[in-house]
Image 1 (cartoon, rainbow, N blue to C red):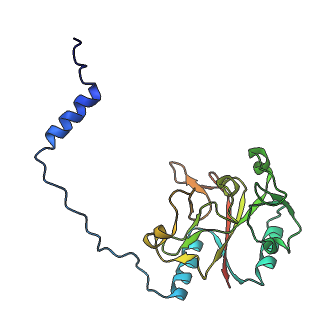
Image 2 (image 1 turned 60 degrees about the horizontal axis):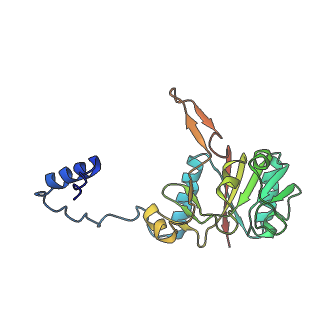
Image 3 (image 1 turned 90 degrees about the vertical axis):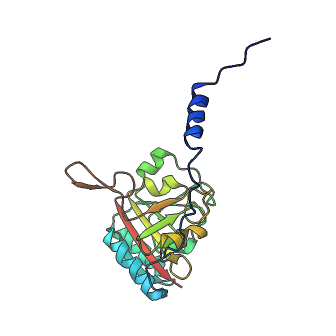
Length: 220
């Protein structure tokens, strides 16, 4: 008859932890009575707060209507010397109708192909929509949905123009945003252009993402 297998080091450690915790009282349930937002429930106030916090994070913020959007995007691309723009699948065709720059359609966009890392490195800009915008933190959230594309599209090009529909894509706080986001999707949270600092606190932009971020608040 074979001898029983001795417990592994992991099992011995876990057994000691269970023994040490045997007399520990149960952890009380955490309080859930905290505020979900610090902003009054007023659409204009929330939108102004989003605008201010986006600008505080060094994003350029623009407010336009549906009719004005194509002209604004065309102007921004021209003013930044853009020659090529990456286009994610599902981006409304009319958004780039006033731009003469070369459009590179990615992945599932009609007539598009997967842009390689080398292709993206040579692309000057990208135009996307978003999933949500959070006013209290000045954050744009992308989830890879229609008009947003895969994560690499918004991390490699140096200029990102992101359009936010103010009617249904703006919330006041992070707690309000979470129930509206799917945690199984590739969520990208953007608060201003990419930036980092060295040990002497010298700020460098464009290290881990776009150097320039334009956020367009679209009223419909």
